[in-house]
Image 1 (spheres, one colour):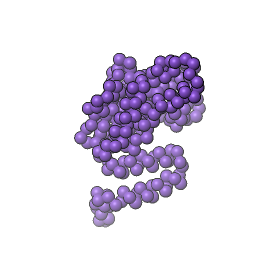
Image 2: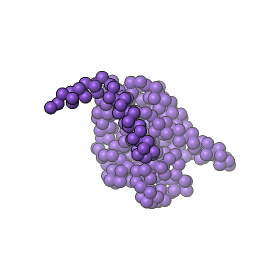
Image 3: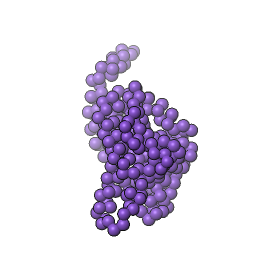
Image 4: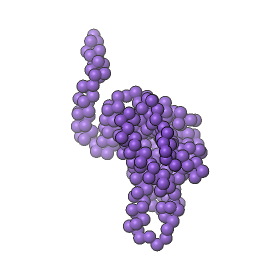
Length: 255
């Protein structure tokens, strides 16, 4: 268990780590304190050589209700540069999760709003409860989307639907989020489903899982040639592992 005030980090023996946003009275809004703890937590997972998969979830009825807007934008008269710098530091909270080398799974129940949507989208895979709500409500209060939200939604939804959602300050709920690719699957208990999926991922050799995650990231952002070059190296490297050598030897003996 962790010593943080707004988070809990649990370690399972199979290499699964579970990060819980633990401020349910505030629907797990990302305060400056939670922002700092999320960055610290991600650094701890990164340094944990036994960590194989991270599951991210929220305590209570919500996944995350977004940034604490009073802390972030409440002080009047600040220059735009200072507001921008404060916002960029808030982005660090979920981008630190996005940058982790291990596979990450968000178990989303209730609301994932604004920065909470960004945190969910920073995870590699999202499992949603039927009542989950993925909301990009920035424009409803006159704010431009931030923290990579535009990128995340274009990647998941395509340009046309992302633009419509962002202009309307829209929400995709449960089944709709799965249908449009914002979430992978719908589950009555997304945390239990995420833990089961995480255990299956954790059974994949750690280096292999990390390389597959890297290859998928390259395919999504760098194109075919970069992906092919990485695959050639990563496949050769994976072929040298003892367990893989045994599997290959069995394949060689097949008639």
